[in-house]
Image 1 (tube, one colour):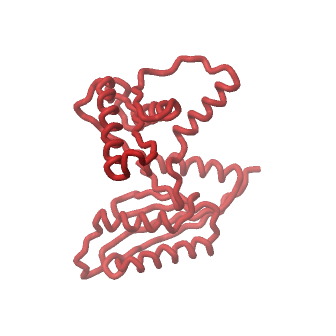
Image 2: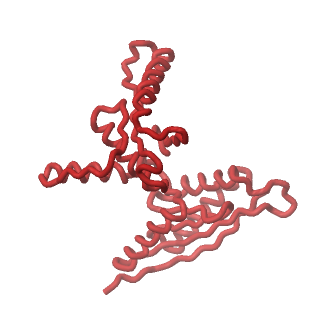
Image 3: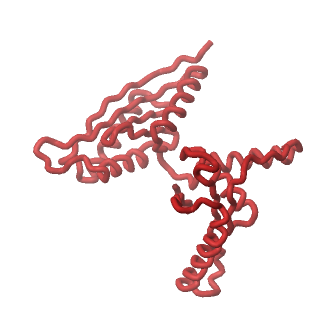
Length: 241
């Protein structure tokens, strides 16, 4: 799911207690492998931290289970790493002292914040993109600004043998992410279609961005087989009085 973090689903595990031996075994194997590669005295503190949520017991939808497991992962990291924690229900502890509130802010931002920040735009699924897009429309409605909406469609050129495969679409998605700014948004709206929102851009800047994207596509050598069609709309939002 990003950098050094991985998500796993275990269909046959129904009890959180099963992860005690699993966490111990994985950490032991990692240390043994590191010793084989780097020597016993490598001095590198390697290990695995795990946050666990049980489907059915703690929820059934991916988003809720992921958030619960992610919260447990943060607890393990905050308590020394290299262990596991299973969600056991909401924490009813009253957070009243100022220092507790400060820690609670830190906990929440750790959970919802971006992991392993990278350059380039964020690629969202439809649901997440819709939420962020609606927020941006509210923000621009209040404070004004400008933006560009782009729609790209990948189509096989006439006479070309290659279809628009998932691998080709992934190459184009990577080009978008590398070309656009971190504040821009991408959604793969269909298998061969990408919707892009460029924040704070005028028409000239939008045209420059499109040119860069098409130039990178040509540099991949795929433009002779796969045509990139696009349309764009530049919008200026007026600040509410």
